[in-house]
Image 1: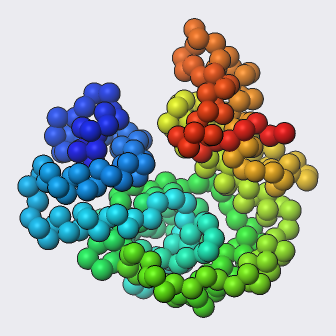
Image 2 (image 1 turned 90 degrees about the vertical axis):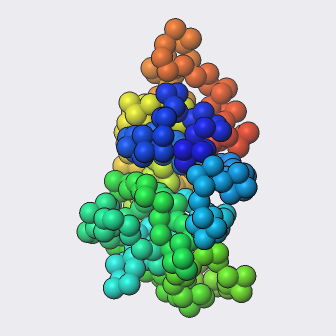
Amino acid sequence: MFYVNQRLNVVADDPATPEELAVLPPAVRLKIRDAFVAHMDLLDAFTSENPANLPEDELDIVRSWRHLVAGKFYAFRELKKHTVFLSSTEPVTAYGVLALSQPFEELIGPYLPVMTQTVLLPFKGKIVYDGLISRFSISFGSGIKRMLSESFTQAMQSNGILTSLPIPATAKTPTKALKAKSRSETNPKEASAAALATITGLIDKFCHEHLNEEYASMCRKLAEKLARKRPSPLIQGNPNAWASGIVRAVGGANFLHDKSQTPYLRASDIDHYGSSGKCVLGRWPE
């Protein structure tokens, strides 16, 4: 990550050593981590240059990180050998993940499932995480828990719990019938909670990269208010579009588009970040 920051200048006041970077606040290190995930070519550059003078066996570990899996996961079940993380995208995959110096219970709490965001890494035939994990403050009702249990069963029937990366080329695709069943049994309240988790995740990422925590908090409150409506409008339409609309609405009410204000961002810029692939937001909902 020190190498990534040197190449991309993510942090304004560059830490002078890897040790200085390691003690920076998690929010700052997250920016560097996300920049690395967006510029995976730096992995090959690092192993070629080897600025840290790593021995060959450690360089092999770094090379293996090209098979990392980044995104949102449901921390689903604590087992004796590992914690099961379910992918939030389809096809659903179950990963057996090992904690590092702290157990996951201390990091994300003892009550599962929990929606998290992190990066899974291969390490000597095991799967670990990169040391930075965030949780979403979303509680799941019986409908979502049942859906996750069915997703876990689906993943187990297809490929079992994956305990190493990369995902085998022989991995099976889960059956469509079970997917349809899981969706059909989710009632509107549970669907709203799931949509809220997705939308707030998009909002948090965008505000983290382009605005600040105050904006993220205001946007989350608006999203939560919409989720409480019956029926919730969030279950209709594209989550990216809702996230974009919420950011634009909050920004408009707080003069985000005024150049004399800090932070400053034009409404068209919010759309641009989504359409250009630079961030996760899309267009204002029609």
